[in-house]
Length: 111
Image 1: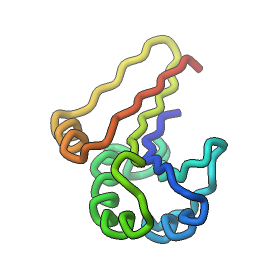
Image 2: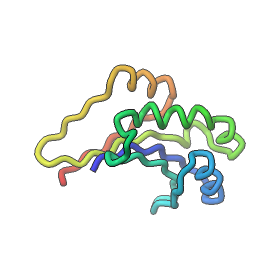
Image 3: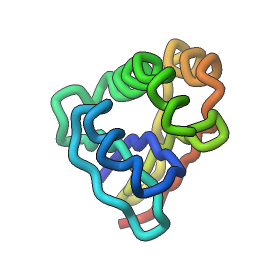
Image 4: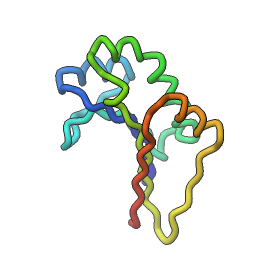
């Protein structure tokens, strides 16, 4: 399993509006974060970073009206591996992440 996740630390009352903005159905996870997930089974997984950051940029003003601040946002990469943990990000992806100002959080585990 491999996932990219845009995680937003916000009040549960904003979840419905966030679902509308990002055109998805998300539920509160155990820690109270709203999440926009793209898995390796999604057709646009290869462009997940571009996809997430584009959606985020299009919704920045709406997020501000909901009280979401830049420090409430994080981009996650979750990677389950069998025998060796290897992955890479393109220079374009790294530049885009850097320009967004989002922290990139990486979690790997052996499955």
